[in-house]
Length: 149
Image (tube, rainbow, N blue to C red; front, top):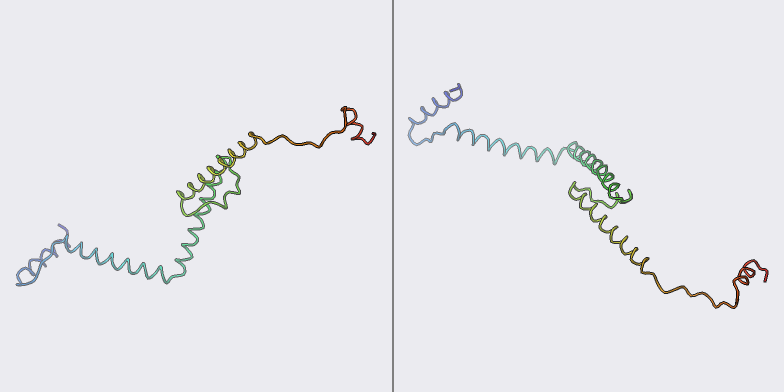
């Protein structure tokens, strides 16, 4: 037993002799004190965070650094997926997971647009209508193009 435990035990013995008073074990005392300390710490931390402009400035700087890190990671992820860096402006930098979801959404959108464009291009359209040709021979067309006819 350490000195603190001995003192508490002696104190408990003295208190137990008095009628009507409750005695506490060391564990109970520790829990009571810990609960009160945590409550006071929470209250003080809340007061400091609300009133201290340095805390707000620090939080802003931490958020800015986190965004810079997310942007660097996102730039690499976009390049790996073949997405232009201009898409960085479209991403959600709330957290890593949100940023990754934004990248995936942009990739899906780009794939859909590319697929649709390819389908439209490959499908083709009606043949181009050229004006009626009054020339009978290709040589006449060449002469006309050079203004010789």
